[in-house]
Image 1 (cartoon, helix red, strand yellow):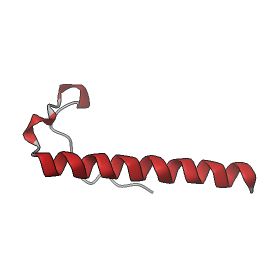
Image 2 (tube, one colour):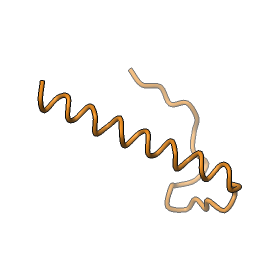
Image 3 (cartoon, one colour):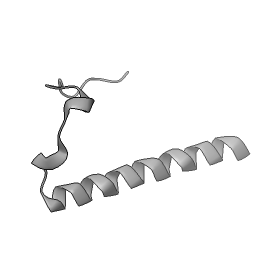
Length: 49
């Protein structure tokens, strides 16, 4: 069962990423790439298992 870790204070379309500094933006990009890599890997394992 998933739990909501925090309550959002705004909708994602209304969020402005200018609040992040350059390091935080790089970290977000890295995390997104890892998430996408893991999602693709799981799909491939499911497909070929």
